[in-house]
Length: 130
Length: 362
Image 1 (cartoon, each protein chain N blue to C red):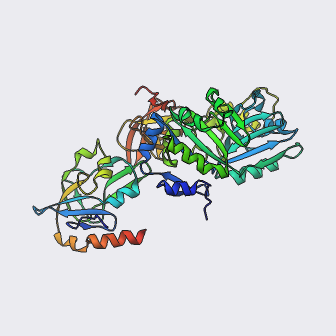
Image 2: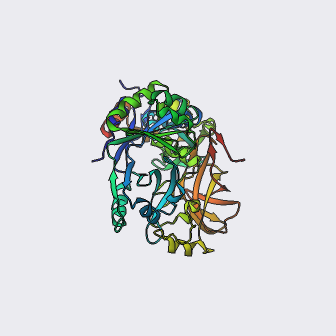
Image 3: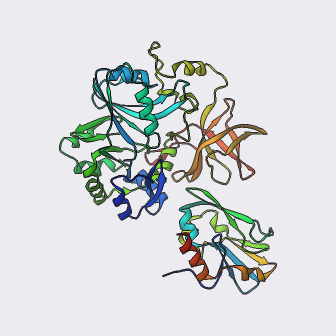
């Protein structure tokens, strides 16, 4: 039984993006992604005010094994980052869909969300990879 | 198709994430690599190292053969069971492999060589054996389990035969045998513990008994961070056929005396020994943000001075650490290029951590 939240969308590169309903979107990596990476030891986040392109790399997560780029699923401006991850990157391992969120953006084109996967589509992608 | 050790079903049963390594399908971790690392520093963990190859060398010419083959000198081994770490070099002084050799008698030595290099090693050893009276026998019938950590010996000893229980008294780098069982006080973690050779058909039961005694299974991931913290080289990343022990921090393993012992690679090594341009092998602790990785470039101002050979995150120091090979004029710090940015790092002398604790003042 999947525990992939249905209240958000997913990128094929394993990020989730949640419309908070107040014009902001929260972005993180999926539980499947953190599991593939293993124990995380370092997170490099974008800066507040930085403008992002859909599909562009904007953050890095490093596990004991390797570094991995995080891509922004949408274009927009970074309006908040999860500073708590700096001292506790393992929060992503523990709660990828909740406390392990990475940054929030103000999207420049909300229709970009339509091109992303829903929970069912993402689960199918993961099943295919395995 | 990758090979499987006799413990493969145990790894599956214990939830290992299995990955290809040196031609074998081996456990990377059983859940959390970090937890396994701490388990070994603070209590006891075990590693399946059966992919490594035990090689017996027997015959009247074995001692003179090994004094020719190895850069360290087996003449230093006087007591039965005593072990020596050595590099095996090619004619150019590059490292064919690094290994442990045990003295089991005047006509019987035992070597343990790396998994990925086994076929190359055996071919090289065969080529070099001309004129020596000896037989080289890979012991593929033996499995090997490393039990490491401050509580490793106490948890292991009750599971051993009466004779092998005396292994509790072994000094570091010594071994004791009972039939085909072989217990050595060696390891690759910087902790107290044993490396135990066990007949293949008894390995799974022994693994299970260790688990029941509270020894946690650990994978190659933790093995790598533990050996990095302990300041121990990894063949293939820190040195290889092109790199001499003198540029890999292993000069201490080369026995220069007696000066008339003509071991393979001695000539080029003698020349390099006097070379002021010879590269230095150093430790690094990242002071800026990020994680040091293999092959990252190092800079002193605008001048590139070398590269990282093994890098990673140190769970004990909670900092990123590395080994690097650099030009000899390196100072007390340098910059590492990480994704296009220069990040400062402190130059240190490994080890970084041993016996549960950081050994560097940071």
